[in-house]
Image 1: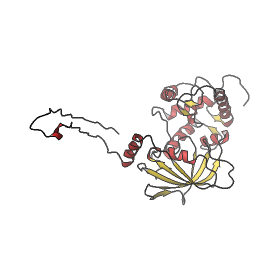
Image 2: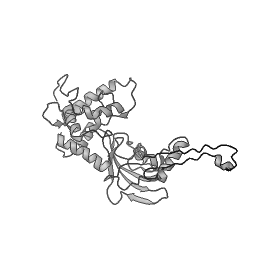
Image 3: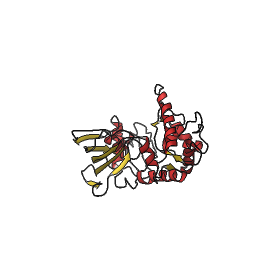
Image 4: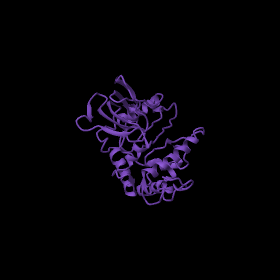
Length: 302
């Protein structure tokens, strides 16, 4: 949204007999271009002016006596929700249809719920209030019923299932046809699915899905047959994770934590963080071959 502000300043001389005192006040005209701001956007600006943005509010309405595990980043979780506007009007619920399954902390959900779901146990119930700045997400198949212009949204959550992150589970999420191998077309379809269903896409709009898929194949394909088996994929993931762990003592740059999905290939220096510079250069780098090929170094048996 763009706004242009035009200032007209009338410089008036004091003591003029033809002018009243109020006429000495400079005249300022503000003219906006584009759609007017919503009440939620105005509220967000007011929050920033009053000391900073608001955060989520969490109320635990039921916690089971036994909690085998709590949901954390990268876990695959399944949950039900009801969503209400600030005036307590229900706008949507998953009850009666089907629950939602996502991977926490990977951009598949609105930021407010990503925070509000962490730490939940299976069967736990929560009420999570999400301010405007943490509730925005493109209208997609999964999130099409969530309003984007409310000051606050309230979610009533029920955690159904928590599946801890593992190499096996991550590969399964990429393997759309379940044949145990990843190919170029499948990886392109995976990117389309993430965007269409969850609104998850490359932050750099210049990245081409086909180029990213080709680069991903080259990055993981140990035997260079154009396919990535689970054994090949796991071997390269372990290689990278070992290198990341060896750099833990090094001060991390600003950026986002590495995504174990197709976004794994954005971390070009293998430090566990995707920096703005890496993201900006990705569209050009993906047109080339990885600097470090999967079959370089010690050639162990798969």
